[in-house]
View (spheres, rainbow, N blue to C red):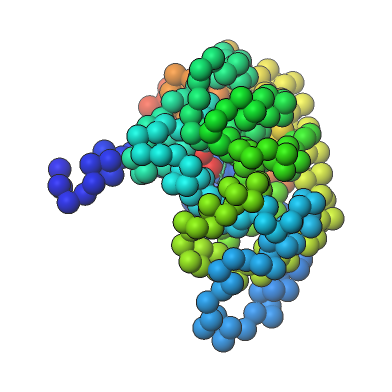
Length: 364
Ligand SMILES: Cc1ncc(COP(=O)(O)O)c(C=O)c1O
């Protein structure tokens, strides 16, 4: 072992991002990206951007972008923090709110980045297993952690917990509850209004999913100005670049376009659920842009994953006790989902399990 490397980093198993194949023919249903382009105004930003402007540092506090986000959510810019993807904000939350020797909490399975961020920050973890049916269990008495990450709707299971339960956890906790709402635009209910009323509930959102902008890396947090100010104190000076701020502003200003994307994806989601159920697949009640599916009894998730991959349809398979009987399938365009169902209908080749690609994360 190289003793120059901090022991927690040397021990760390890094986060496993989803595969990004080079082949454009692959039907890519593995990383919960949006299959449609972002708002037309984004293209206009890219057409008119002046390379010479990139000489200058960006606005370190994203004033204009935060004002636009605040308008959408009915708060003030003091309630808004912007980050280099919501992943950066999750990392900052541990550094800002979890003391040395503290532990972070989260449900398991949920977003597998949380324990990685804890290991990087050299703090402990206190995961709570989801119930057998993947619903959130009651929080045990005396369970209190300085930071609890509640992914809602959850990934990879796609299901949403009642917002009242999240609020109850915050109300009964001394710590900060970070409500990771990466997929909330596809859900029936969103929780930002709950954050204004509480000093310890922070909501995180991303431009990567509903806004179709995973490529620029932009996320934001909504919450009490004290929590927001703490994030500002510790962030990198220029954590959101100039182009990203302009693109984010263009995208968030066009809420009608956002709603049109969300409606399209929800309609495709409903059709795909029906097609899978007709074929004997179990499908969790999705409030996201992906499905959590269980193959019929005569085939395993690993076999389906490998067989579909061989046909050029890539979904996400997470081996393991809790997750290894399911697959996560991103909702693509209607044409992509039609191809997916075609592949589902093919007979499975025998004994493909050993070819299934190992994947130890449950993230994007
Ligand atoms: C639950 C959850 N939170 C956060 C993220 C990261 O979002 P971003 O692209 O904004 O970093 C993901 C990515 O898939 C996710 O699944």
